[in-house]
Length: 106
Image (tube, rainbow, N blue to C red; front, side, top):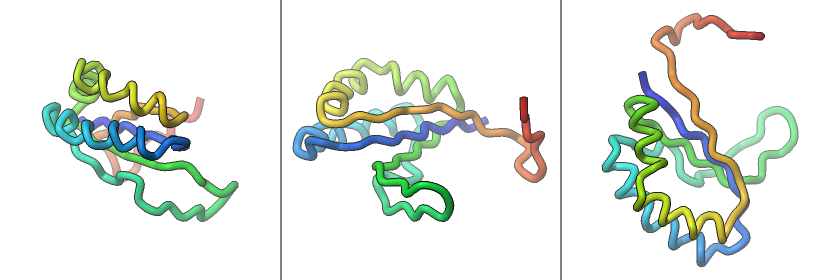
């Protein structure tokens, strides 16, 4: 099942952040991932305005997603992201049933 990294960040040093973005695509591709969105415009439809940068990555499965995250070349690139921004990266696995999945309210 596919797995998705949903990443939000506030960039305070764009020049340094570009050092991160220049290194990331090759590492994503090496682990079978792809960008679904990468800093594109976001429209807030409901709730407080979303003002952060948003990136969504898709990987074939959770193992591939974590292999990318743990890749030494990617972790080296992360030094630029951590120096230039604050944010979060969350991992969510997809489901086979996308028509009417269990809502999993607990």
